[in-house]
Length: 150
Image (cartoon, helix red, strand yellow):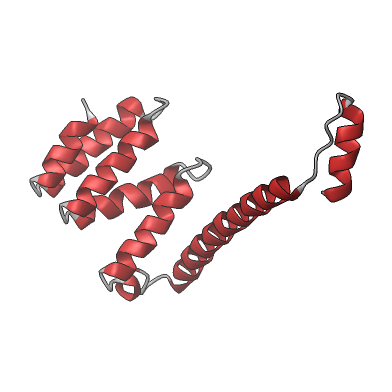
C-alpha cells in the first residue's frame, strides 16, 4: 500500500476507490514519521486534478484525527481556502455555524501567529544588523553590550 495508489485513483477521479485506499493507508502508516507529508502530497495532487471530495476528506480527517500535529493548521487553512475558492463555504457549514466560526478563528489565529513570527524574525534581523559589537575577546563584556541594545 502506497500513497501513490490513493493519488492515482484521485487523479483518475475514482473517488470511492481513492477514499478506500486512503482508509487503508491511514490504518497501516499513521505512525510513520513522514505520514503527514504523504497526506500533504495527496491533498495537493487532489486539488491540482480537481478531485475536491478527496481533497476535503484528507483535510478534515487530518484536522479531526491529528489535532496536535504541527501541520494540522495548514490542512485546516487549506480546507477553508478551498471552500472559499469554490464558493462553497456557506454550503459546507450551513448546519454548523459554530463550526464555521471556529474554523475561521483557527485560520485567523494561524495567520496571526505566522505574521507574528515573521515580524519577530524581521525585528531580530534588523536588531542584529544595528547592534554595535565590541572587538574584545571578553565574552561577558560583549554580552552586556548587546543586552543594552536588546
